[in-house]
Length: 120
Figure 1 (cartoon, rainbow, N blue to C red):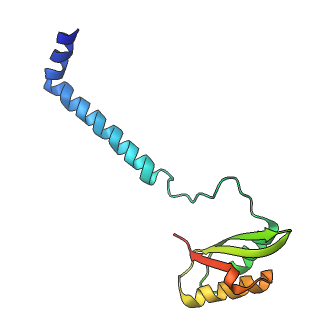
Figure 2: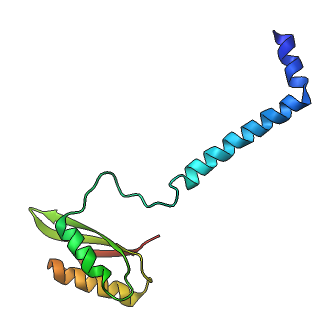
Figure 3: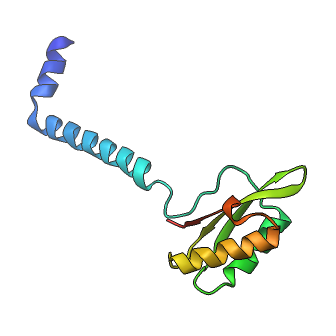
């Protein structure tokens, strides 16, 4: 048995095929880790936006330069206390200030409790 395994590994063609298979497996693993999402955006778990989040997202998307938005509203006892907004548009101070002001007024919360981030 040992002798037959030694003969197999002495075969140059077998070694080349073995190295190629190993390289393909490594390439597949790297692709799966870094590019496995296929370019689709993933949301966190099975979270379904509330009606208020959908309405605010729709309003914010109509602001010049904002583009599509994703909104998450933090609530305590059913009252909004904070908001996180991710937008696809051009990242600029004016765009961020418009989004913060609109969300703050719509939710009746202080502007410091509205966090705005550009999308990746």
